[in-house]
Amino acid sequence: RNIAPTQAANILYRHGEIILTQRQAALQELMAFLDRLEGSLQVSASTIPGEYLLPQLLVDFHFQFPRVDVNLSISDSTKVCHQVSCGEADLGFVGARLDVLGVEYRPFASDQLVLVVPNDAKWQSIEQISMEDLLQEPFLARESGSGTRLSLERQIGFSLNQFNVKTVLGSTNAIKEGLKAGLGISVLSHLAVQTEFANGLLKTVHIEDGKSLRRDFFVVTHTSRTLSPIAES
Image (tube, rainbow, N blue to C red; front, side, top):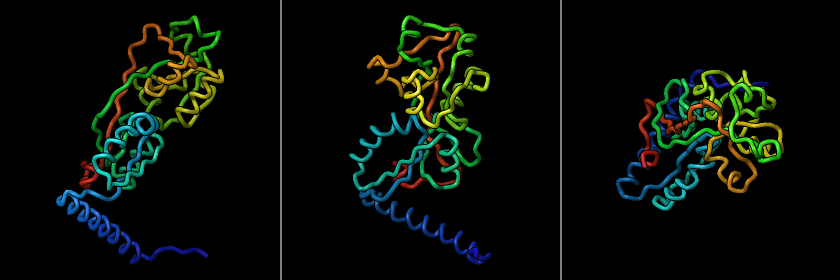
């Protein structure tokens, strides 16, 4: 009732993957030599770079290399790094360095983390809050693999488990909708809330005695795999 590959099949499969990868690399290198770069590029990105930084970069890339098809998948930083490490993605873009074997990081952009609250009657006149009071407020958090969450925890020096976490949500957009609905407050990348700030739906509150929470974004590549000409481009 079950089908399983034999040991010989596992050997053939492993070598077959190598052959197909080498074939694709050879074709791409020839196309690059002929100045006709074409093929596909698999990119994996976490939420903030994937939704707020890469779209414009991909527009520019497609204009320069119209024969290249880019497939972009979006998940959290942990999954992105594992996809690069196991060869499922050619390039990754994340918002935090993780201890994942087989990958290396290069910074490519930066942003600020800001405390975001609903622009309602409770918060309209509040411009700053103490850390002690912040820990008591209902907090909307990203999941444990999120680069936003990891960056925040590293910079404040303790886990979000010490916050009054009411809800854990799997995307930045979900958190923004929760903020608008008055479910609580959160810390988000400034890139993600510019539209809501401009429209007056959300606002930022300064944390007393809190340092500026800077975050960096990184390109993730495999340490031992040579990038294809498309990925290099």
